[in-house]
Length: 232
Image (cartoon, rainbow, N blue to C red; front, side):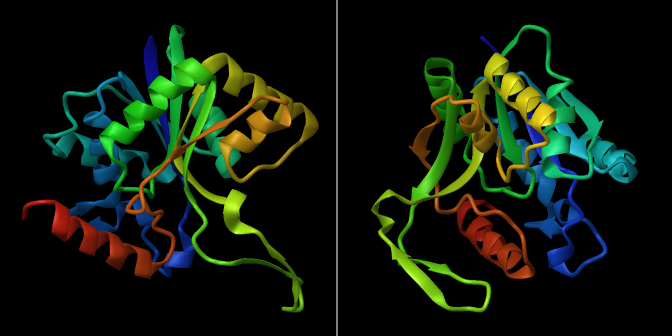
């Protein structure tokens, strides 16, 4: 079973309030994206990583990968992203190996992903077809109107906050993306497109530390976690 990964890092990260794309901001002494890539380098089954980034950042990203000793022994392909995350993933899927059986899709801005979680997703996707990771909702969930009024309080028992990585058999995720392109469908994650074509998606319990760095406070939180987990 050949496994590739698509890591999506083409966003501008405007909510960080910084001119530098968030995946290049420093985290524990290195660019954030290096920690994400190291997680995949340490996974047992990932043989190739397609890193989807903004076209203007390709030279910088290539230099970062070459400069990190932990990454130089692995196979990376750089791919320019599209206007939406969905477009970027589609471009990444076009660079999979011909014999790739399972693809793992991950947000580049989740630098604390555990290698063993990646491997669990791969194994489950080979068996089930489509797998996501997530956490059961801990807080009360309310539906709120545009003018700020509570419309409904929802039972949280069956609500999960979904993360990445998400892993799929290649033929399944390609079919999902082809259907989305034909129907001009939008989705905030890859599993949603698989659900749209009537396929089952299995959820594995994720990791509370596997946060997505979206605003500056997230970067501080990730730094705190890394200081506790990693040697200086």
